[in-house]
Length: 121
Image 1 (cartoon, helix red, strand yellow):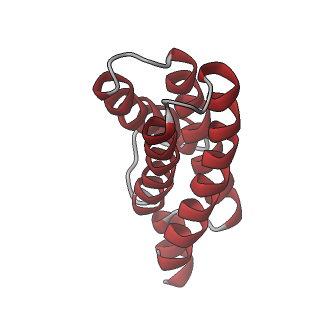
Image 2 (cartoon, one colour):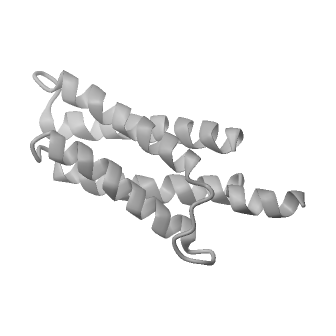
Image 3 (cartoon, helix red, strand yellow):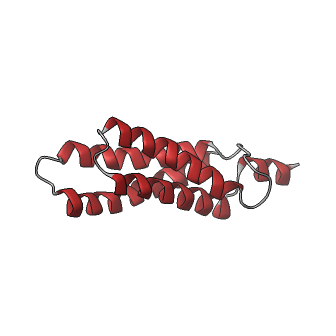
């Protein structure tokens, strides 16, 4: 689990860097500094939560990380979107896609806690 959390958190931080670039292009930097930092932090939190979610099964099978990532991306990104006064809809959509990418990548490379516990028996 520790490896999964580290990988997904780092991946979230890297994707957050892309969000910073996109947000600056869409909204500008001046006057949006706090929003941009909070957007990056939101991606780090998204990665961390996805890292912890390796044992959650929403649907059985290979689609689980995709669906789980989309749901977690939507919930975590949605909370940021709502708390920012609906300021950046593109950032909300990116959160859903990033949730999918983080969970799919980390589950493919590291595995889920369910898969790891099955292999260790």
